[in-house]
Length: 245
Image 1: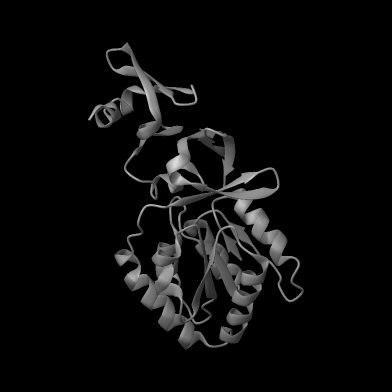
Image 2 (image 1 turned 60 degrees about the vertical axis):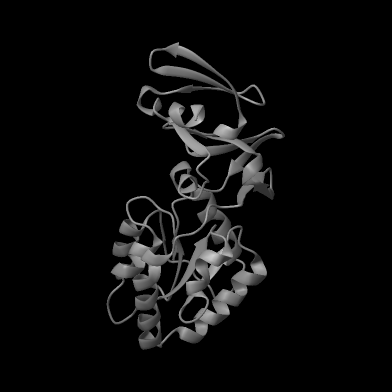
């Protein structure tokens, strides 16, 4: 079963899993809350779980897993490796986005050895749940993006802004726009302090602001180095203070 709030992420992982004969995908969910009901009904042997999801993230989902038939878990995350060292032994494995086919098969082989060993799975799930709060990942150094069919790793320092358009999130750089693999709220939690949300659909890197013009007493127009313009919402006007400092 796949649990990930990103439709693109679920589709890419599903396509890779469907190439493995012994795998049958019994369900998908876009957050931990929806997943719990399906897990109880479907009783999957293995979960692929994203960490950053609305309503209920991966860590919280793990804490709520109960019953005699616990599934093995593979964390699917965009976190840097240092932030997921807690998963490197035991029943919980991890995959870094974008998922590589070879690494995916390794995780599945490991999970197959755990099926039928509920005590080992339960022990490790409890350990991860108890240590999850202590994990405080440093700001991301790279962002995973897509350009056509290719995945591209972007240095955070070169990112000018992130902009949501419906279900899509665009990463804006001097070289152009790239499609993000995560939603805006998930990316925001891992960005350095220089990134400020100025609108519910936009986050800008204040280091790349070229001009600021006051539109009204509490509305501003920001112009980035590539001449892209963003209007700061009234609710986010306080973010301007950070830019002025």
